[in-house]
Image (cartoon, rainbow, N blue to C red; front, side, top):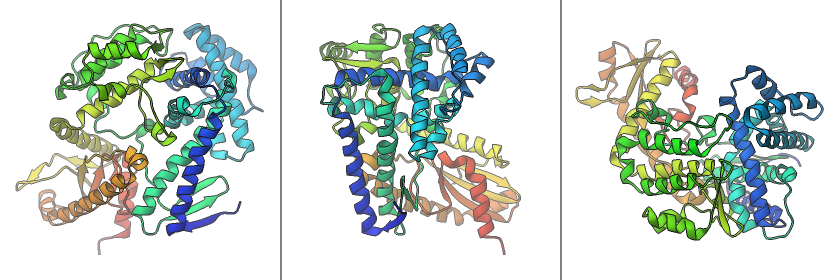
Length: 508
């Protein structure tokens, strides 16, 4: 297929058509399978993937770490003797069942690397070329892999059983080819509304666009007002349970996660929100864990537990996936999936659910909004200092407030920090709201830049410098063509971006 370019209405029609085709392709691919066996097999594969992703922070054996993470997954270079050595020591540290899960996963990843390479999907093939690369790749696809899990009860209507050895053969192409294409097309649909010069380029292996929207922070995580890592060091001491040394995940670690969330966000009275009831439910469930990982419970018993802890009906509904479409599944954070007449979850799914629900409870709190703004400013100051800027302790001049003031090479950088919420799920589930919010915020931020232009004499006089440049950095990314507006997710590029603007507008 030759490369072509679509603009205007033609681009939008193609996007809508492709969205329908890829969403339908996922449902069609899964329709032949029996749902309960597929939930079991895919959930088990996700367990192995989560374990692999977390191994870099777990392994203290340098020889094993080097042997594992440098392992070449390209079939022609795949060293089975080296794999045997790796599995021996993984079994020694984490048990035979863990080693077996990693063996199955690594063999499947090698097969998928070859499959994507032969099909010409070179970026994916490179992403799966070594174990280290595969960890980064799988981390970037977590949302799509979990989305497939959530859609299984609705999509799987047949009788075929998905074998454990074939899960990636069936599921990874759906996540990569259809899943990432869907998320990309949803973003590009929004871009077409927000940019008059939007162009969609149709390539042999997918689509690219003239404008891009970067939604994720480090580690492929979605932006949030305050990540727990920004508060954990200042939290009250937590009495953690000892965790098994031969487990990457455990019920004890889940209870420790809850304790850390409660301590880190205690200043915002998290215990007085609906979080407390659901945290109590999860704590109780953690004592019913099978293999220190799985939780299986009947809907009736889960309801009884929710009643005991006074969890409202709307909030308990969030616990269980009921995604009617793959797009909805991509934005789901549920803990449980229907399974054999019961509900199935894991310690990682329960922790992920509570972490997301914590944000639901806190985002409306005024104190949290204000405090998160100050934490955001401190994060920007730290990042700028790493890039060679001198950050000044200026907060107010003549009763005029400033967020972050930094200097470099005789130039003052006056940075406004904006913490306005833009939920990335709006792009998928409520595009009209996303577009409306984006336009409002873009105008607001541009007015903020103009306002700072009118106050630059205050900074010139205070710092004895002749040039002041205003910028806006947002906590939640927005779509904009204004180079002076950027997001925290791109903060490491700020110095380069600032230099480009300064060079394009030299002082005359």
